[in-house]
Amino acid sequence: MNNDSTPSLHVVCGAGQIGIQLADLLLALGHRVRIVRRGDPGPSRKNLEWVRGDLTDLRFADQVARGAAVVYDVMNPLYHQWPELLLPMGRGAVHAAASAGAKLVALDCLYMYGQPSGPMNEDAPRTPSSKKGRLRVELAEMRLDAHARGKVEVAIGRASDFFGPGIVMAVFGERFFGRVFAGKAGECFGDPDMPHSYTYGPDVASALVTLGEHEESFGKVWHLPTPPAESTRALATRIGAALGREIPLTRVPDLLLSAMGIFSPLMREMAEMTYQWKVPFVIDDTRFRETFGVLPTPIDEAANATARWALARFGASSARVGRRSALSERHSP
Image (cartoon, rainbow, N blue to C red):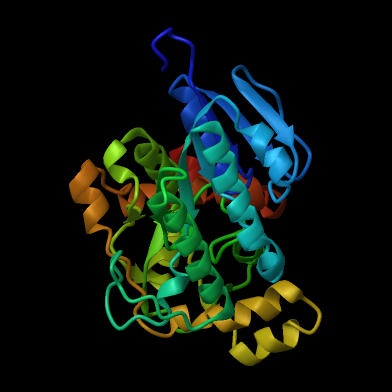
């Protein structure tokens, strides 16, 4: 809050899987929120403003963050658009925050580390093994350079693959649950029994708020709170238990992804990222936990919430009369 009790303005750049959850948290804390997106605005609410525009247009970026205390960059174009949009969008968010005299909190991933040889902390070597990883290195350097030059205060939060309510573009997303509720095996990449960190979506949004609230977060990279790594199969089993059903897994071969890429640019870009499921891919979030005293949501609680959301969103059309999952029984009135 400001000294005059006027709610402070927080600008959320991006209205995707994390942006909406982040806006909800900020509103619950009593802030005014302005969501900036390239597409159509969402539903209106008290203290919530939608602005449609393109942050790669620096004149628009100048205007959209005026009056903001914090700008959050949670934009993430589709994979095949990264070469064209990722860096210009990131520059737009830096420019917007700098023009407004606001702080910048930016969401990032782990692609810049490449194929790890052990748990990845914030000081792990940046040795990208993909085109997208190299772009992420450039983006991080641009943000941190802006901070070092005194242009804007920047904090970067990195997370592993998302799962949870509202997460549709992910391993445990729309395609996965669509198959599961159709009675098919869930698809996965690489080795389903390889340890792999999955970060819970609501924890990502909450951690970004934490970074925006603490002065010590700026000028640094932070790995966001993530449950202890287990395999893709183990997480699928937890979600299946919450649904009262087994979830078998089937591996998607790299050759099939490449073949699908002939018709789908997204699948073509996904093919180079499957290395993450062929070796232990483990995030070390010790710095965040010890600095802010924040832990990730317990894994069973996160799996149960994911299952409830998946059942409500994807399971209704495939539900049969006389059959109710163990989850729906547990949570019926």
